[in-house]
Length: 573
Ligand code: BGC
Image 1 (cartoon, protein in one colour):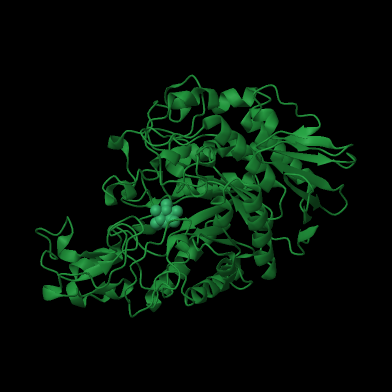
Image 2 (cartoon, helix red, strand yellow):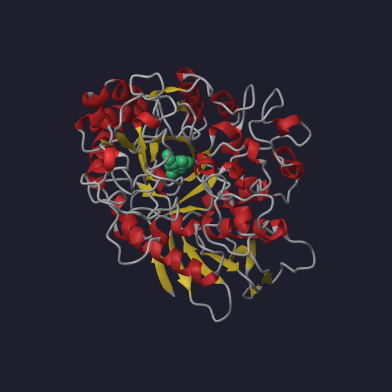
């Protein structure tokens, strides 16, 4: 037996919360084809009933939407597409009435090129004081025609754009400006320079702005990217979204733009701001690929927790899960932070499809109609098993909108409707992330599946989603939706405590969760082969009930690709 984790001694709300990720443009609309704050507010009851404790909203701030809102033009105002600031405050107020905490997104690595700072930096020429907020440099080579270094954009292509090459240059005050600016993402997302004190001041003030309006925390976008080596040395490797440096060759110098030690000073400073407001959460989105690095972001005086992307990219295999679970808990426990469990978000192929591909792991960056299509039944079955495996583990759970419906990726979107800059910056070599961002199906029989009152939807929804619509699933006791509700309810009843990973003789991953004053809860996940349950086991939750395609006998066995929770003595449940 391996003790994975001992019960928590501190009880901040975010330590064991179920946090539901809302992708605002695709959750629910109160009007046209794009989801909005009104739609979100009207559906908060659904999230509460699901059993979530908190919501995290991807950005809803004023933005030209070149990267679906992760290009912020004004951090203090709501984009008219989503409503206005009153609508945001009303949404937060309603969430609080329902006892849901609200985490908002903070995008501190870059602004939009439409941000007032960047516009002033362009218009004011090389001496503009606003240039100090960003990374403007002269080019290399003859006439400065080469970028200042060889860094690559995460979205494909070079990480530098020359000012006079911008599409808006002709006829503008910058049409002859030959300086370059850095953007680790799209050219519309210039990187901020965090050695500039004004950048610090501005973000301290933005934190206070949303905390004063009731936000209970922040998800920090690209938390591993803010600090750069000011010398900007060459480093030509691709740092992958979510899986981080996993494909960077060994023995190359540490990246000058990712995971720099100076970044931690920023989070210490923010912690100081947050301490004036009780227990707000700071959640790191940092793609590192090593839990040893991850734990540095969640030391007591920095962030609260970090997305566990090692778990997300793990294949659905016993040995891989054993390793990632034990390591994540050990690393986070070493600094007193809770582990998080996450299987999907708006940047990866949905788990219900990823697990149905022949090669699991992070999976491709989107799927197109002529590429390998996931085995839908297998993928959905494994995703549910993985959800049930993680839901009784200590730590907090992140669920991406639609996972509760076992929603798959849209794998046949026509290229004409794609919007992700990845698709354009790779000249279509990568499909991009639109397939996991398709608007949710609420009502089976309505146009746009009830996503918007006027029946429109900014991306087409697959016809097969009729059966997965929320209203259908609500009425079916064996649906994925009702499974999630039951699972989250049970999780609250049984509580989280210590966790022990068992060395079993046979196949399957077994662990025991012991919460104070409760009977031990046993969790077993069967992978490729069924696992026999011990005598006297009473099943309280079985993911296979949802996806079982007849024939398999759940009683006494955990069927392949499923998870079962059982107690030996039911008292207390
Ligand atoms: C967000 C992405 C976004 C990128 C640039 C992220 O990690 O989750 O959706 O494209 O940051 O802001």
